[in-house]
Length: 78
Image (tube, rainbow, N blue to C red; front, side, top):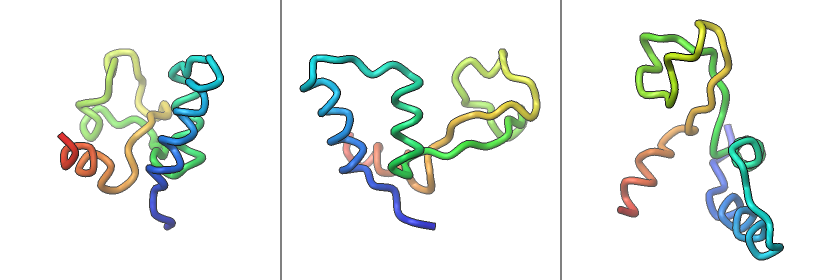
């Protein structure tokens, strides 16, 4: 598996802003997948207790999750 490209993802997000646009959730998810920052998993209520709006998901629905240590990288920067 390739390493997540956080720098590329951040630059893509900045480019959207520099162009005077906004990035909605769908755009962020698409770019996250493209740059390897996110991946999809089938929703499992036991495993995905911290997914936002989990009460609206059914088992087997696709959810977006950070790849590997994505959360750890974010925590390191806090």
